[in-house]
Image 1 (spheres, rainbow, N blue to C red):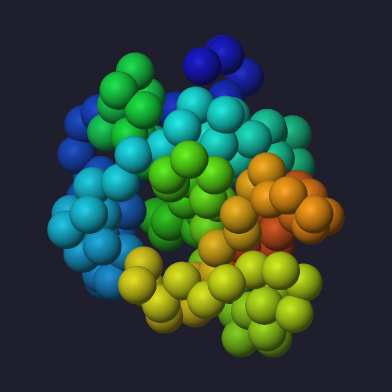
Image 2: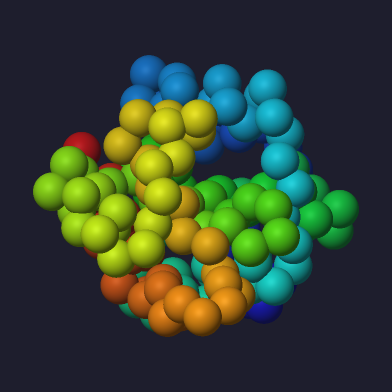
Length: 142
């Protein structure tokens, strides 16, 4: 991690988020404890760096390549998981647009979440900066 990206490696996620605003995703993370490939995590962090205001990147262990969560306003708004998945919590209107532009519904994570697959052959690269900023703005509003 570079000094310009605010991050928390390990520690208790419950201390960083409001459990009542994140109950579904916290349940998912506890049940699945997903990994995150370093390229996927880096892509998500680069998309947020310089574009979002106050945010924090959290992983139970960046070194062990566990999931990467982006947090603002005590809400998780983005998640890097697996070999190539970047997921966002979006309001309903944007959720529908994301699905029309290549995202898949990520209801197994929590309601209102979509997942973009990176490095997908024969498919345009998702605009991570746009979707990260949209998820961030929605999380800042409440």
